[in-house]
Image (cartoon, rainbow, N blue to C red):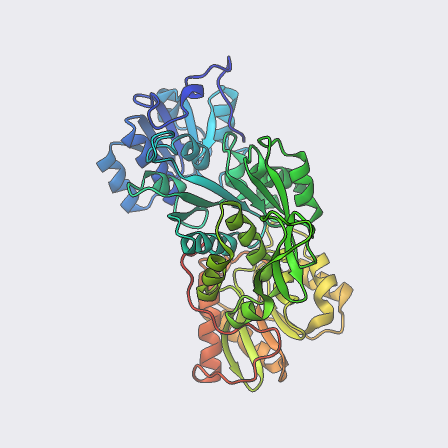
Length: 524
């Protein structure tokens, strides 16, 4: 699924590049009615388009609000064929909510008819001038685009905090939970949008031209949706297309470098690398425990400017290696728009990670209990496991088509034992049998959602020894047994506290464990 124009390439939608374009009367189908789908319908209704929403699941609140804004709804369960009402509409444009597979019958029907298919981000980019007019002294917000298999939300929040500390009006939006269309339509206006973009959203985006962009990393994920690793990587790579100033990439991930090398960018855009090593003259990195900038100052060939230190990051719960990498990426993005180093340091001193991201639930008897429920794929779990020397690992759930064996092979040596959850256990069991057959392994099987974490915690406690971390980093999605990763993490924390009898803490947190973190600014 890509943004596609009509049969002759001169569709009416070609000219729809501004809030002031002729949207009135445009026949639009909207596929999906979640937070994103409603933001699309509401925006198009405001533009006086003829809007028909097609959805399978419908929240009653959105049904009522569609009546208020004047959009129509067709609910089809299951949505396996194109509804007659959509055929009768003969739409000139189809807007698809994130998550619908590119071979969904409605999308296939639209593409075969030459109907342009966009996502909400493509629509938002074309409407970005609703607040602010180029040349008027009140410019539309610049966009900073952030994607990656892991670390997107943290990097978006870090970047937004740095920009705000630098005095800019900033809105973190997109896949972070605030639809980008809502940010575009906010009457107060902003200087910068920091836009979190999933591979689903990038797949259907074509005209976006951000100020700066980053792909933090790429590892197997969502292969059940994209169909192949190659298609997934290609979707992620779209983040760099038409970038105007800075293409930030991960020097430790060759795929992100290749994305930048192959991207069709605006002339003058620079490639800016980041990783945990010594930086080159167009990079940010680390020298003797000091995070430094060798990219955004005049004497970068012979001098490095201090951003902060690893020890200072550790003191505020940002010391895990993968989090330090996120700090470096965010610093590069912030520096690309001129934010001072002192503002970045101020932002970092006040920043706290969101819940369920290497969050210490409790410590007792020298054992730390850590919730990293947000580690929903092997790449994220590997980063979490690497932060601690000895781990009792609680893992499992929905693997989403990825290969779990490389993670087990890589990290088995640092494990005290394993407790398995979830439906997709066969692959995990096989991997441990091949690569760590003597490692203690227990299964929390035959239990309901309300009790499974209590069983898992009891099994983990029996394995743990002083100096260990009991780590919930499932490497899998949660929806087989839980509402979402937050529900999974909350149930883990509750089970830990119930098992320990209170909410104890002591001073014996193992090396590498971050201090307890409060809630961040936004959630995924």
